[in-house]
Image (cartoon, rainbow, N blue to C red):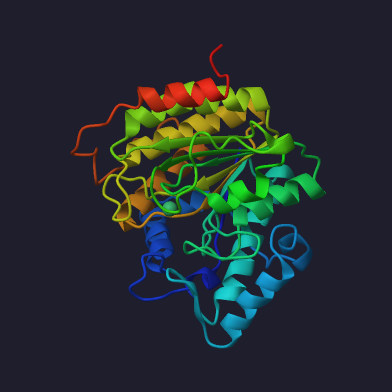
Length: 345
Ligand SMILES: [Zn+2]
């Protein structure tokens, strides 16, 4: 089955020199994919700007108008680290619309799975407020699209960005139709994501937070997928898996202290690919969130595409190698998360 990708040049126009979340991230990804002959193997999916109706399922009209106004007035900041440039509003509409198109293409069976290479990222964006480099919450908008317009009743969102996706959690914490699973460094920005945060009201149990101390790496993540994410996903029985794919948990990323390698990211992609195959006819859609070491970002995504293509002959390409530091064990975190979610069989 084919793998699709979304890209649009407007994603480069949301850019601020000297800011870690800049256009070089996407340029590097495309350069690495091109250099290794990956792009011709993928099906391009055309992005469209998100419609107001789809955007307003997640964001308030007042906030949407604010982003548009700041962009039209020449740009500015929504908070200390979240910038808006003149093209940012259109780029953000196209980012959310690009992920929705990727989701549509997978649900329509045009491709087996897809990766939306979009910017700006989304998982910190709240209904009425942008933060953490994020303007509109792309993954939340795509999940709402699938639930509202498609024959989908349960969506699993897996977020392996090193930061907790507080915006996504906020959108779905009371909603039993969406299970949100996040691995993240903790305590760290934005401060949410304790394992005790498990959902509210009817959504009780549908948030699975896996807060990690610095130093957790490939082996720890493999255990988390085996012992937490896999069992939780099997119990939930999703019909679609969306992935907030952040590559800032790489050992050489400048923004945090987890220890994943490019190979560890490929193993995560494999685990998700297998889960989607077992649970939902392979329906798996990745969307780009963070990741600020350019090579780690590019090569992690290159290898992820090889996994998504089911390329058995592929050999890992990782110029950065494994973490030079030892891994921190995480038996206690895994035990706590398994206990609060009743994952012990
Ligand atoms: Zn991040």
